Image (cartoon, rainbow, N blue to C red; front, side):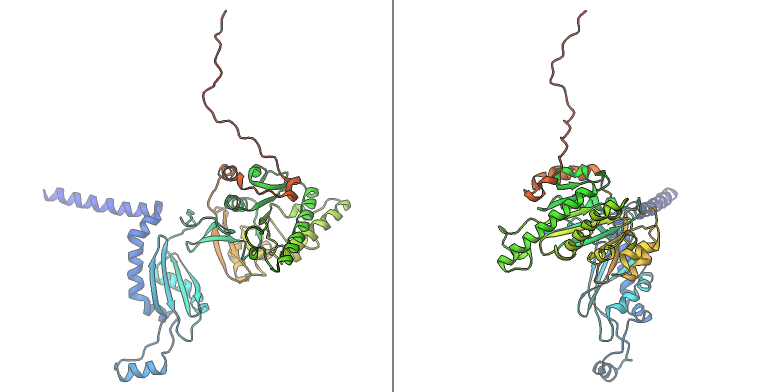
Length: 446
């Protein structure tokens, strides 16, 4: 009987160990909730003060505190680490809010993030300043970008579209009110099209006008026609469309001037024009020319794009530009247009210069990270803006059929805009669902 009990205990132990190992690989959220989080909490609690000391994140106490400690408490005066204000576990990691003592700044904590990561045995540590004097340590217990799973609360709303997951487990959101113009760069098979699919799927659910510019004969955007207010597939049509958008922008400025406001969002709902999002699939097709006769068309396109990028935000017209490269080699006006694009997302690129085109002027520290994105991780990118901050993101896999279904489901949200009517694409008719035939068969007779 004793041998049987020993055998059962050994089998149970091996099964439990195997289950933990399986969960760590196949179900990392379950492993983190059951094993990783308790272990990390214990390690963090026991080693916090010592870790902060060896990482150089402590300061000398104030004179009053040193006097009280030395003369009243009769203890040796110790350096002071940041005070822990809140510790909160999440499904992907741990959030710790710290109150910084005088003499420390968020940059000091951010510089020590790699040392903190190794000390507490977590996958990554991201430092975010929440308010003056306070920072939040966002720790992740595992690689959340290996299998992207968007937070359940990430839903499109108020010109905000969640399109990817950050490496700290939060959603990366495309906020058109904060970053009205954006640039997305990436090589072939880098995930640039997947980023655009997620964006279109989210925008389709909002009351906006979607304008597609796909000069590859519409191979990417034509299938989304049920939700598009306009679609152009040649540079000549694009030149005409941008001219119409500039004229609409000027009309909207007249409306703003009449009501004494500087932005369409300050207008009452019944007077506010419909926001317009322009999705340019490949910017190089609009800039490159094959003959001298195309120069005039290119000049009109570049001038219109620069005017829209500089002023259209207040009129509710937003640009979303994608491309493989966007440097001065595309010709006159390229760098001037790029300077107006606030949001930057750079996927895997073929050379360091392309990463510098997208990131060097807004977040120079992000250029090495964008240059090291591996090929086996499509959809991974570096997102930055003019604030200088940046983060690594990855878009979830969304099939074309899912985006097409969303465009058809929300086709009723296509606004009635007469100025875009000449460019309105013809939506393909839905194929009838398979089912039994209603035609009564006739018997075959000799």
